[in-house]
Amino acid sequence: MTNGFTSESMKELLRLTSWCLNPVREHRPSMSLVETEVHRIREQEIRLTTVMAESSTPIVTLGSQLFTTSR
Image 1 (cartoon, rainbow, N blue to C red):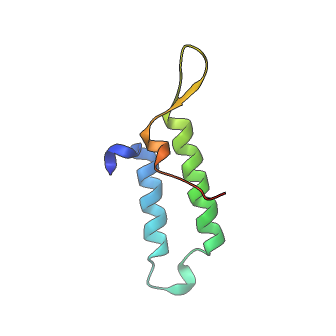
Image 2 (image 1 turned 180 degrees about the horizontal axis):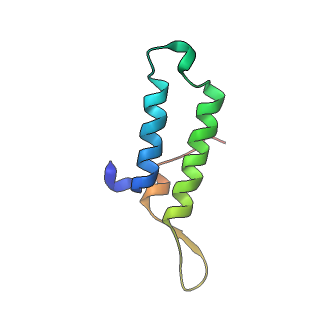
């Protein structure tokens, strides 16, 4: 799994996961905040793993393909 993420995105995702698992309910993030963070991490991953090809068409590596949305 670590080969599919940049180290920066993996750190962010693990930080978010740890925050969600806080034993004190009041210290956990709301689901709307979790959703916002996941989208932010996804966008960060896309920026970090997108390479511009010679034709200026973005090519996205596997890291950003790990995140999918149903929208």
